[in-house]
Length: 370
Ligand code: SAH
Ligand code: SF4
Image (cartoon, rainbow, N blue to C red; front, side, top):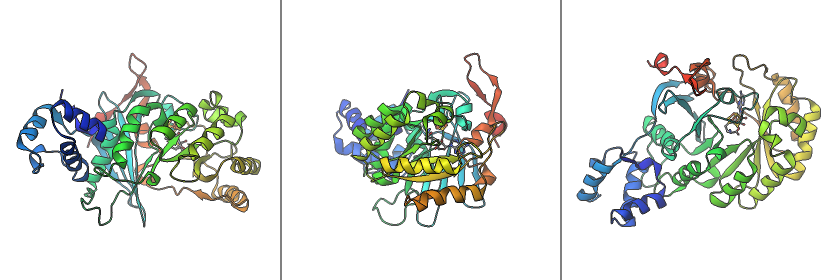
């Protein structure tokens, strides 16, 4: 099996090259070709010694997950469904805005944490993505958007921000996620600033501490409920790491975070977590942790059992927070016509009634191929 170069961060590539007697600057050269130029062909790496190119042709490959479906919404949102083998698929979404372009990527095929309102959670867990499959989403999107980073660092980058808010819990796939993050941040690769790379977690407390030490990037925490009683139901990992511990971990994270606030995500579920009293409880939480709230109108999916709060309810809820001096944004629902909302597309091609012998969901990829 050839080695997939997308699996390496700089340290990893330097170490692998060292086993072949190659110097670290060779690793930097190849890293730039692969990530800055979006190159998949060793023959094009003209400043790399011919002998090394021949060796790479033989022992290495540059392999990203392949799109099964590529849909562009009328609002410019572009969504890919990506084949990760074994009838598994994950999603990546590009969201263009006036002053930035955000790529939302996945970290796992499925998710084991089973949040009650999440379509990915309902699909169950299949497997962790490799570092190459994670960073490969950025590599591929750059190529497909025709926007491989400018080698001089000039000009506009189409992808200026990456958020790990696609399928899966990033902190449950810690090592591969950190390797992928290192590549995103590396000046020889994508050179993104730590403030523009966001990990979203449902609140795996020990892994939040590890991320702080290994690779502190911007952090979003899926709060979704202002007290343990409700959060235990909506985000079951809360039973293991209750709010008090979660908020303490947020404060520890802030000691090293590139931003001086945590973004708390809060899905708006009609009649469940959207009362005025819940907003007032959130105000109390904001007194404990420096934070912003991002209200996410619930994205419905079949048999979810939930409804999206009305726009008036969301406005009123948001006003209570804003009146208390807390920065609060409401996520725009975008790309509805291409099912760009979290987990929706893969949810559609997953037949939840059919499971393999191991209990894995079956993805009907072939029916989606066009
Ligand atoms: N597992 C991580 C990151 C992926 S989910 C996490 O839970 O944080 C990205 C965000 O989308 C999370 O805040 C998640 O709770 C939210 N989300 C999941 N399903 C949703 C739905 N149906 N509608 C709106 N937001 C949803
Ligand atoms: Fe997993 Fe996040 Fe969905 Fe919860 S919300 S099931 S942690 S992907």
